[in-house]
Image (cartoon, rainbow, N blue to C red; front, side):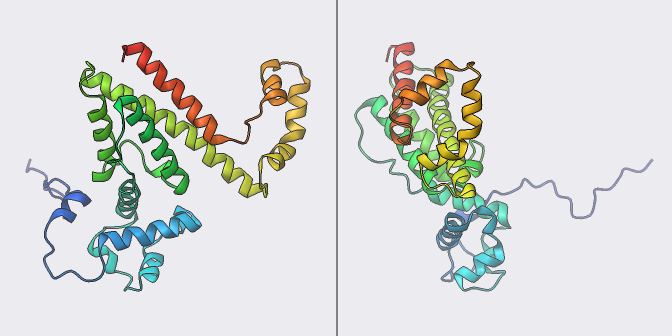
Length: 246
């Protein structure tokens, strides 16, 4: 039986990533359109209207170029999102001086939170697997801060992921609450609690949740997400320090 031929257009060549392509010299003189301009314009649209508002046609209009112009750099929306994520990660102040591993990890976490809150769409697009040059600079900074403390490579990564996992979980909750408030037209914590009061009153009335009822009655920082985040972060870092004797 004759061997089957490969489908038309199939190739054994490995796929070249966006980042490798952008590192290559341009085959023709560069125009005023650049990856930086593309990312900056797309990020502005996503920040103002959400990620779904970002389309190649909308981007071309914002840039004042032909609809196909951006395809010189990105193959479509998936690569455009990669470019956008890398752009916002590139704004992190990773070179700011810090004192010791704990200060460095704390600063990294605080800056990551601020970045996600400024660009809420990154909560669902900036995963640990959406690798890009500026994204990889984040673990590189953390690894440098943790070096020299007797941690092996696996443990170093576990510590990094513990801290960034805390950041992601906290920010995801903040972004979700903000989205709920916009959807319901609630402007602050008081309006949010008033809106949720019927359901909460019934639940507390069952008597099954005395611990949560005490929180509702006594807590004074319900509307201080910054304090909540940094207090939890300090607990995470203190736990790491105690566990490894750092």
